[in-house]
Image 1 (cartoon, one colour):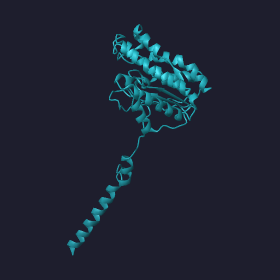
Image 2 (cartoon, helix red, strand yellow):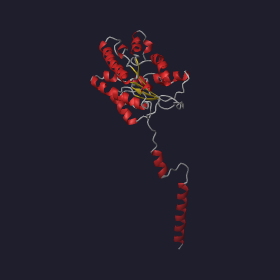
Image 3 (cartoon, rainbow, N blue to C red):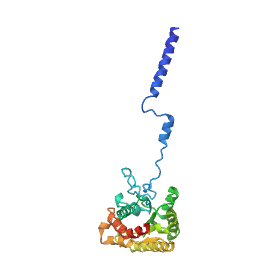
Image 4 (tube, helix red, strand yellow):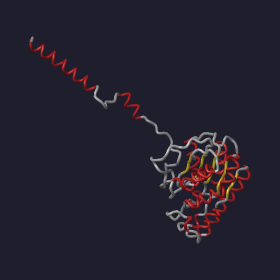
Length: 268
């Protein structure tokens, strides 16, 4: 009898200890743990993923929350748009937004879909995956240098550039007046490109830009030639970033100076 009583009290003691343990701070039940493990951070719109196999300079963390302006802007491109080898605030789309704010326009921070190394095909694939909204007030496109650099057949660019322009127009809610395109800079004048000694690079860049300009004219889309600015780097090394290839923040500022008035007029 005494043995049975002791066993009963021991069983009660074990139950009480188990109940107390379940109430300890920091314990997560099964459902809470499942919710924690399935948090979705969403897509990063400033091109930090690197499908092109090269590292870009997108910064992670520490960035301020986007400013809630009324005018939205989407910038599409490659290393020239994400600003390879310059600080985030020196990227030309970021400088453009800041300049337009100073001109009195209520601009949101730019959404940027761009990665170093992207070709026209890479950008098309990224847009299919990300599915940007179709109500941007302003959309820009700068793409093509990696098609040339990789030696792709020119017919690929002839096919895919119009497809990207169609997408850009769709993201601007079908309004071609809210879309603009920049020419491809001439990297042949950089130390990486041989400081202008390889004339084939410049000639091929011109071919790409001639087609781009003609296509924009056919679409009725605003086109800016910034290639001449890039070629000034032959005598102005301050226009080249520290990597010896990409534009510096100063060159990007000169691009913005060229395009800001026309873009502002379109937005007004």
